[in-house]
Length: 93
Image 1 (cartoon, rainbow, N blue to C red):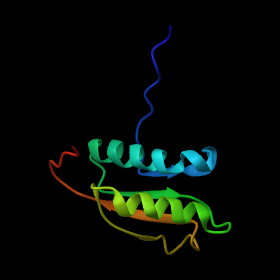
Image 2: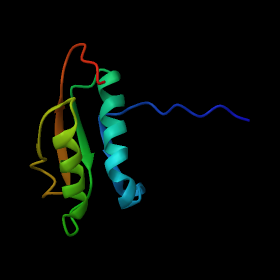
Image 3: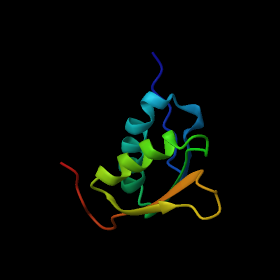
Image 4: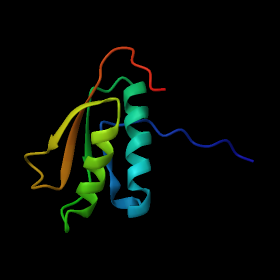
């Protein structure tokens, strides 16, 4: 059996490839991995549509202990959210 391929964590994740039911857990895992990789700010592309994905993403960010603040990306017309992460050594229990 092959070992899983490790994908580098980038400062942007595009959620279009994920099923809506998975978005919340994908965001949770991405934020934790981005923090571990030393990123301080990330961009989460969720698309504009009806706003459902945006709501799911922002609800996940609201409850994530590593997220300091988040806001709609001004250049994306509500199609992406920027999140600022805690800096330093913070561990999630």
